Length: 251
Ligand SMILES: C[S@@+](CC[C@H](N)C(=O)[O-])C[C@H]1O[C@@H](n2cnc3c(N)ncnc32)[C@H](O)[C@@H]1O
Image: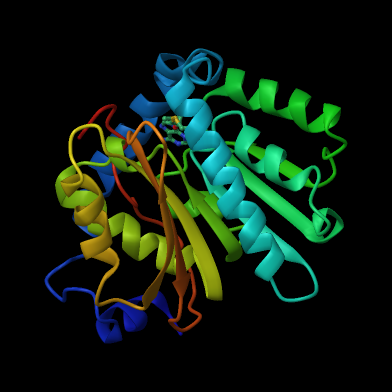
């Protein structure tokens, strides 16, 4: 099924349009160029962030969710896709000692080249360099995924807080195109500014093709980690178009 048809038939709000296609294309291209020119704002982020207890708790919870999804994955190859992957330590941490590790093929899309280089080094150290493919590219545009395809497990960790409010539903929709039927998404959402932020994302998934699975909270109550399963149809990825505009600390 083509995504346009899928979107028309889906239970997502019909008033939501695909962003930045057609007449908005020049604006989309300009934003893509600016993002490419300013990747350095995230340099060193994983090393600094993961020194903090809260992020360590979040990492542990994401690894647990991912490990559980691997436990439940049907026999055969398991495709993992991480959007805005950082240095990939969550995927590496969960896959390296998992009994399904030989079945895994993972694509980690990250714009910051420093994090990508670090991640590649970690994957070599973990013996996962043939399993993990880091893609140093913009995760917010559909065209990045054209040679990847749909995944069994999609990770969207540390991302919602950088998606403008009116574009969050676009990301939910994109995840529906990036996830195979029966597959799962694992996402995180900060809760230090209130549980409402989690409820907002849950509401976007409610009434769509997604079934809510496990939701856990870190001991410091700063993060929610959620797994949702996709019950919708398979469909083609849009060849082009903006998924959302990554805006640091959008809320
Ligand atoms: C809060 S960090 C989360 C990293 C990782 N998912 C984690 O949880 O450890 C956000 C990441 O998004 C990356 N990023 C920002 N804009 C991006 C874009 N347009 N495409 C891909 N990655 C991007 C940053 O470089 C940073 O590594």
